[in-house]
Structure formats: C-alpha cells, structure tokens
Image (tube, rainbow, N blue to C red; front, side, top):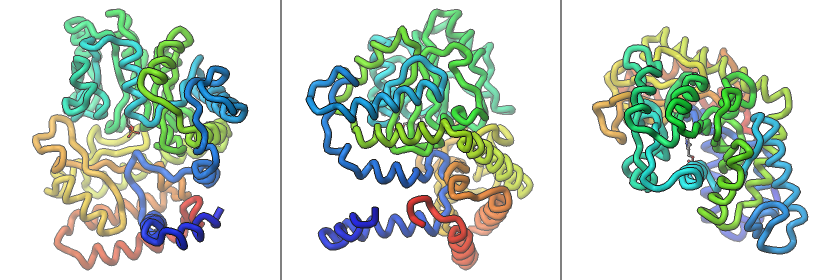
Length: 419
Ligand SMILES: *Cc1c(COP(=O)(O)O)cnc(C)c1O
C-alpha cells in the first residue's frame, strides 16, 4: 500500500508534495462539510488498482470489448448489493458522479421542454435540480416549491397546487441543504394526482437511509432514487440510479450510450466494497451515531445562541444563519472557522438577500467526524470552539490557539487510511 508513495516521491516530487500536503491537512483539521467523508482504506486501495486500466463500455454480459470476466462480476456485485441495501428492483452504478447521474434520469424519462417540479435552490435544492446556470436548467422547465419561512416545513397543499397548475412530468425531492427528513408519501400523492414520475435525489443522506435511520422513498412507491456514493455512504466519488424494473432499460440506455462512454471500473469496484460495508449491521450503528452527533451539535450551538434554519436537524447536517447569529456573512464565517482548523462551507439560506458567494449562512455536518470516531463529547467541544471563534472575529490569537486544540483533538481520532 505505501510503495506507491515512495515511487511517486522519487518520480514526481511536485505532485508528491501536493499529496503529502493534503494528507497533513486532512489529518490535522476537522472536516465539517456535510457532503464530505473519509472513505475506507480498501476503497482507497481499489481506486488505485488495475481496474482503472480496463475499458468496459456496455453492461455485464453485453460489453463492447473483450476481457470482461472480472469487471462483469464486480459490477454485478455492486448492482446486487445496491438493490438489497435500498430495497429496489434495479440499480445502475455507472454514473461518473452525481451530476451526470441526475442528467441521465431527466434525459432518459423526459423530453426537452418538459416540466420538473423541484425544491427551490435557496431552500435546499441542488445545482443539478435546474439551476439557471446549468445546462439542465435550459433544457427543461423547472418549477419551484419552497419551505415555510417560520417552520421550515414543506406545505404540501402548495406543492399540489403548483402541480395542478404546471402539470410536471416529474416530481423531484431531495436536497443539498435542508436539515429535515421528507414526507415521501405526500410527494407521491402530489405526483400521482397529475400522472408524474417520482424521483428522490438522496445524494446527501443515502447513508442514513441505508442505515435505517431515515425514510426510504421506495417504501412509498417512488419510481427513481439517485445518490452519490461519496457522501454519507463513505464510498468513492460516483453516482447510482436506483429504479423500478419497468424503467430499467430506459435508465440504462440513458447512462450508456446516451450520456457516457466507458464506466470507471475502479470506482465501481469501490462502490461494491462500500455497499458490502453498508449491508453490515455495524453501518446502522454508524448511521445512528452520525444522527446523534448532528443533534448534539445542533443543541450545543443553539445553547450558545446560534440560530439554525428550521431550528434543528433530523439528519446529518445543520444550516446556521451566521448573519443573524453573529453579524457575519457565510463567507466570513467559513474563513474564520477555516483559520481555526474547522472546515465548513458557506451556504445560501431560504430567500437569501445576499449573493451565493457571500450568502448569509454556513452548512455543518457530522458524517466525516463520526467516521473518525468522534462522539457527543467532541461535538460539544467543537460547538464551543465554533461559537467562540465566530463571536470574536477580531481575535486572531484565539483562532491560532483553537487551531492547536483542534489539531490535538484530531490526533486522537486518526483518519482511516492515514493512521
Ligand atoms: C452532491 C449532490 C449532487 C452532485 O454530485 P456531484 O458528484 O458533485 O456531481 C447531486 N445532487 C445532490 C442533492 C447533491 O447533494
């Protein structure tokens, strides 16, 4: 495993220096971006394996190149495990990442110009849910539902009224920045009333669905669930489309040859490993701890006067209004926390008056810290440091000393693969 480092150090010291730098950064700082995680050492190994040498255009048993005995087997393993884990009928594990995954669903089930009903981007929807700057936003007509400004809940009478007015062909739920679980039965009712497909983009929280601590859209009869593999699932960077059997052929054709060429077989092998781990009962325990840590962090921050969007969390993330809590925009808050060794990300809030690069809040999440083995005592410690650093933005000495405290905390919780 370590041999490649010595090879690289000798053959390309410039790239080696960036790798060592990133290793040190990951070791000594605390990762609180909710979409990030530390993957398994076995996944790191298989990503750097000879599976990366192989072209495998097509699907198991139907490839455009020879030599597919082992690539077929590993892709079958990934598909079978995905179906078992998420209780679905079909899985496509080839999307190169989350964005092409969602594009493949839209292009496979709809015609350009069709209407998609999705969550407003400032209320939590993702860029790939039709941001005006994205190609999908130009190709399809996106109509937006929002959350209630006071409670953060989704008003399904309003969603149903939008559906009646705009007749979407697809009702999309799922989010990148929303700290609550979703009422899938209510979304299914809205879609059924207008004959639309149902799709959930569970990219952020699929690990919590797999671990049984959040709802599974397939239990309410959803057509399609998409997810990245590298967030709460702890896998390599990739995407998966899970769907009902009737849609399998259209989804598969849309991914290949519709949108992509050769799949990344090293990533697919990593996804197979990841799903195997997620089927183990130990993963349900991980999911429970991710959730308990998020609740603890939310309660500790609230106790220190931090205002959270929706007032708390039901998942792995919190969205904090730093403008209202500290008079700091999200970019400034992100920068101050970074200086103190805590990585978060600036985040646009519902109907944010500020622009996306200087929004009013930040997102904070617990999957990565939980992977390192941190628990509620560490969450309280982190909440204390965060609130202190943000309430004294002029105090550079404080940030230096917190950075040292964060590094000594992190030294007790090694990053998997970097022990
Ligand atoms: C992260 C994310 C994606 C996109 O994933 P990439 O791998 O960054 O392309 C799509 N949808 C949601 C909801 C996400 O959170």
